[in-house]
Amino acid sequence: MLLAGTSNAWRGIVRLATAMAIAGAPLLIPVEGFARTSPVPDDTETESVEYEAVRIGGTFEFPWSIAFLPDRSLLLTERVGRLQHVRPDGTAREVKGAPAIFNGGLAGLLDVAVDPDFSRSRLIYFSYAYGNERRSTVRVARARLSHDNASLMAKTVIFESSASARDEQYGGRIAITLDGHLFLTVGDRWEQERAQRLDDHLGTVIRIRTDGSVPPDNPFYGRKDVKPEIWSYGHRVSQGLAFDEERGHLYAVEHGPMGGDELNLIERGRNYGWPVISHGIGYDGKPVGEGRAKEGMQQPAHVFGEPPAQAPSGLAIDGGGTTPIFWVGTLAGQALLRLERDGDGERWRETRLLHEELGRIRDVRIGPDGLVYVITDAAEGALYRVDPIVEQAGQRQTR
Image (cartoon, one colour):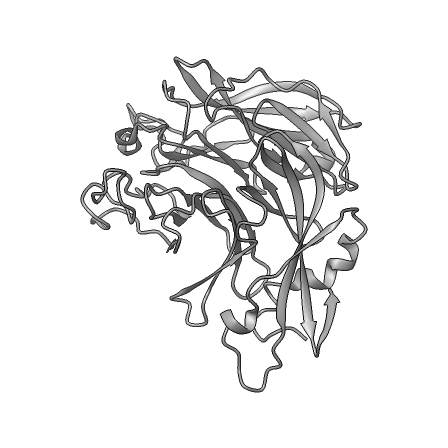
């Protein structure tokens, strides 16, 4: 049996048999067990949990995002500008028709998302850097994926951000709701003061419809000299964005400077403080702005712990239980983080997995089998499935 209170986190364990149909050579990666990270009642049998990182596919050149299709294959973006279709057995084929992108610095092809009605519409959405080394923007395009998953058709740009001359901190994460709204993170591009401006997309989360139109219930819609797409602002750079569909909550993970990486509950019209407030330290070793808090500015739902700079990238939410489980990849931290609220609901329990085993983790998704999938950020990056292994009464079992 599972530990009390952990069945929500690991209901995917019981579905592991389905996932084992996917080929891959397992690499056993032991981590600290639940018995040491989650207090349990005295009458509860304890088990230790290890994880296997099963390499599914690759190599890929700086993979940035993955999105599952209904047939359990997936789409994978490579920052250099390629979109790959990856079958369940790990074999990949480039999808033709990707847009022309700017690929310099950290610019490139970024996120990919699948329309909730994909089985009928065949629509997908992707974000990318557009322009050149002197001036570039973040674009979102919509396209129809051919029935053989080999090419993109009817491409249309549905959003373009304010421009910057900097080629870093683009953001670019997409989340799509069942009612047809698309959210996108736009980084501050190292021009931090722009994150406090409402006439500028930099340092924001934007909200549009999936056809590119602006919903009239956006918080700043109709105001002069304001970008109507802005949903929230005061963000540094958020490289993970996901919905807890069970509760209707949107969350983002955001890079701090030196420390102060955040999990934020993204709410309509709120100011998240950057660069006026931050829980991190500036690169000059001094506090950022006016400190950690200011009236009228939102506090993060959670500030990530050690090491000082995790650089979170990729966010997936398992929201099916009593409390949601957050899965977060980290770049500087080189780990997969499992995050959930403690029993009293006021504290967070943060568990680091696969630490320095796979390298920099760029994206995290929950697959149709209920298991966690990650991609690594490297010139020879790869796709992995994370399998929990339960040990009970001296026997090692794969669930």
